Length: 337
Image (cartoon, rainbow, N blue to C red; front, side):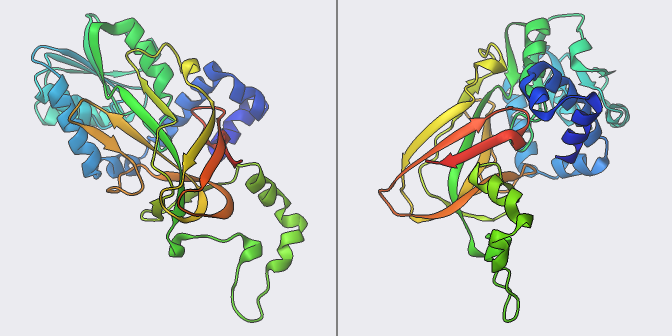
């Protein structure tokens, strides 16, 4: 991401050094997050996502009890705070470090929500005057971790949440699955492009201009953002590489970064890469999935591209996955063994 590189340069740190420092990366991503969600377009996209909105409405209604004290972390336009108030909360703290919280306050006032305190601050500086029963949040980016979810929520959990309190949503599963793309969504490398008579790009296979691209492909660091409907099918039965609960997780360091995956191919096809998606679990009845094969949401899907290979049913497919910096998916790597 251009913003990431710019912030790294401004801080005077090399990319690798900064990526190894989870605490410093947390500060950087809080700054990036404040800029990213300062425009209405981002919020309009999320508000228009009916899968997201209805899952949160149901999950909050199933969790928040009458007279609960609730914190909405990263309130944005205030939607989750309004939902918590409507579910019976006695008091709601709507917390956000961005100026959009003033919009949320205006909307809340005009809609008659009189039990919401709007607090413009970084969540690490927020303190409630009473124990909190529920923390609601939507600290989720396309690859789950990029909005600094884990450090922000674990900090609030340990400081303000009462014993027996809840985080909504609190359980998550991360998937990085081998996929075949639909033919019309497959993007050949430039040295493989067939653009018709008289246009030959094959010489670029040995060109210095493509050295970096070929190196990225061979080291598992070439990434591609998929359009909706791009994935044709999974080649194997999906299994989460990470499955964790924020109520029991001690720290982000407890999540394994290096994975060796071995699966049997259950659906033949071309391996185009590894698609990232997640599930956010509210309760036994309610969850959100950003699987590329389900109803599209406001979250997108990143593809970790690898050299194409044909896979037949019954083949053993083995790959290595490195989640080097959880909140920077550009650092993730996938290599077929």
